[in-house]
Amino acid sequence: MRILYGVTGEGMGHATRSKVILEHLLGRGHEIEVVVSGRAHAFLTRSFPELKVHEVEGLVMVYEDNRVRKSKTAAALLKKLSEVADNHDRMSAIKENFRPELVISDFESLSYYFAKSEDLPILSIDNMQVINRCTLEVEIPDEDQGNFLLAKGIVKAKLPHCDHYLITTFFYPPLRKQRTSLFPPILRDAILDAKALAERGPHVLVYQTSDTFTELLPTLRKLPAQFIVYGLKRDEQLGNVTLKGFSEGGFVRDLATARAVIAGGGFSLMGEAVYLGKPMLTVPLKGQFEQTLNALYLAKLGYGEHHRELDGDAIARFLERSDRYADALRGYRQDRNRQILDGLDRLIDEVKAKGRLV
Image (cartoon, rainbow, N blue to C red; front, side, top):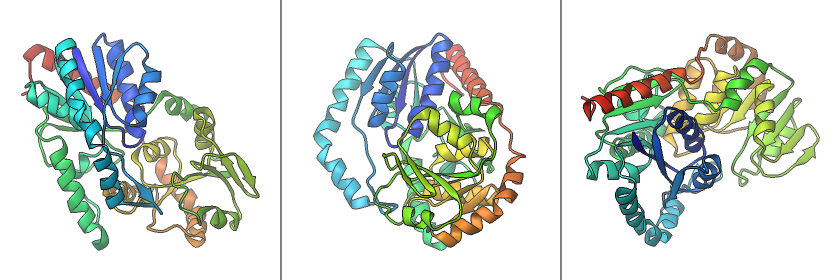
């Protein structure tokens, strides 16, 4: 089939999991074109030089002090409105030259609206739809209720009335809507292959993407543990803290051999940590309910801890309890990416046979 694949550029997790799906679809003989925004465009262009990967403009979140800055995010979007208008021309060219038969969207709106305008079947693949299409079985703190309602409204409005929703998740709340399936997280080959090498070494891996969170390094240096910190974009040794610039091979090795992980509430790294059996202390970005939900379920399942703020006492207590979380993680099972790839193939075969999903 001719498939148009849309990938949101907000965060690289969407791009890395889309790479796995795109490789599978190409292996099955489908013709593919991609629309993608942000940093994900360069990543997918390098990954698939044989594909047409169309760059479009999308929303980019602005973060400061471990918090989403909504006003600055809105201002950044306003500055790009003229470029967003150019998206129409790109989609018109895709319609004329490629003529898609099916659209798959990883939380990307432009491909979704194209599918609706052309009356094409559309499949949604992402982790966000769990907020709207499932009954959540965690207690949402009072201070997060507003963010929950906002996130639910946004997710509900983002890609409504798709033919089917494939939701990736490491927790499995009851479904409350039809045309919905839950699957384990989509993992890149490097993580899948690292499973055989995974062990609990002496160091704690820390992933910190905001260089405005200035108290992190002084806090870590006061603790009696070894830390490897990624995300601050430099190589430096500070006593018991090792800063590393990003390299995929190095990061995967350090993750696979970590004693535990400290990071935000992003779904991709959390799914990787769970798969590799790594206890995790998570501090979600304030205002990002999806991250808060991931953290709440991580704690509910006994895989780690959810904290609103990061300090030395919280880290020390987490490390003292980390063996207990490692024991709970031994019960987690995932058959590589087989389940979601088989599920996607079945849906595509049904579209080919019937023209739509019913």
